[in-house]
Image (cartoon, rainbow, N blue to C red; front, side, top):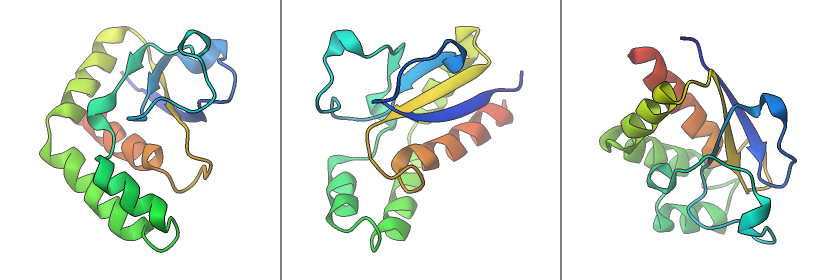
Length: 124
């Protein structure tokens, strides 16, 4: 199967074509009640560590490259990414939407996760 992986901020409304909605933040997003966020999986295990998050947030522009390396390393050395890919394969959905809270749509961990998840899904 070919999967489409989309990225969306948690503050954007859910849409019918979102498919499987996966929250990919370790911490619950500010200002949203749990009952108001539509998601199917909360994938805390594939999120950056607290240390990596704090490192990145200290200087998002200056720390992006090193943060990206650290996060990719974590994803590749853990079986959490493989487990998430297995959940996606078993879901019956061909579209996946990764939900994140960070304001920058280009430089955030979900962008990296999307790339790594695409590779994992294509490998099997």
